Length: 328
Image (cartoon, rainbow, N blue to C red; front, top):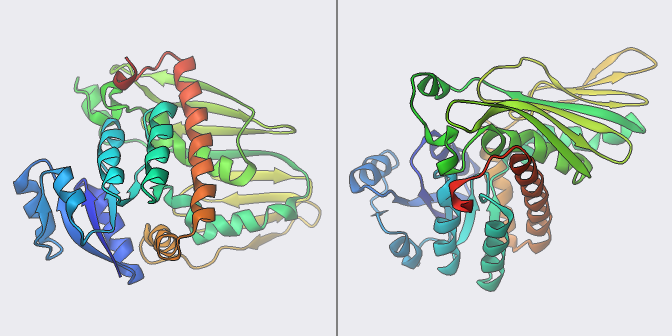
């Protein structure tokens, strides 16, 4: 059993805890929040008595092996740095860092302290994403793909009311590309490798951040179109096109359906498997195995995905004049 602590007390942290506990490989043992009352209230939901308002104190807790961080994007670098120096494995919600310089520093710290830094790309560890991956060869030569994740955020209502939520604030390294666009981009990198070129046409909202838009990822012989947004919703599926057929998934995350459409026979075959009960359970299960088995190779492969995704999003962001406060 891996004792872990959490930084951040939002819904995504609750989802990770539920998924982790469902694997029977993890046990929540500590909660951090900047406010003691918040830490105490959140910890009480899980009958946890150990709380911290100091990251250094959390890092000094010898009972804690791993810390899961789900705080505002701009805090990822400073918080992860403290915990990596304390020799804790860190599972860090996407985006791993605000820019490549921060990312390089974090991976260096992890290696210097002989611990793992893992970006929480939950979707690429789902059983049905792996079904998609394992069936790419059935397509023959790949002609292109369309990967979509556009979902209206309730926090955009606050923007329309004149407020600046963290997730739509450049001060907090927010915006659609960093928060939501990383999902389809990470999927593309996991499926096809790092794109040679990437172009983003965003909708800039009142906060100065990007609310969403269309992305084109260019590869040697094909392109991948991405529709990613937090200010409108798309119901379109995602698809990979090949000479011999098309693979269709209902979504980039929480995949329920993987269909193979045979180009010649015109028939459809459902390939999806039953997924885990909790939507972050498969991710938590994989990361537990990596940590327990000290699987440097697997962690290294995910590091390369993280680096490729951030290189791509950083370039597209800066091409559009989207500069985070941490970069000024």
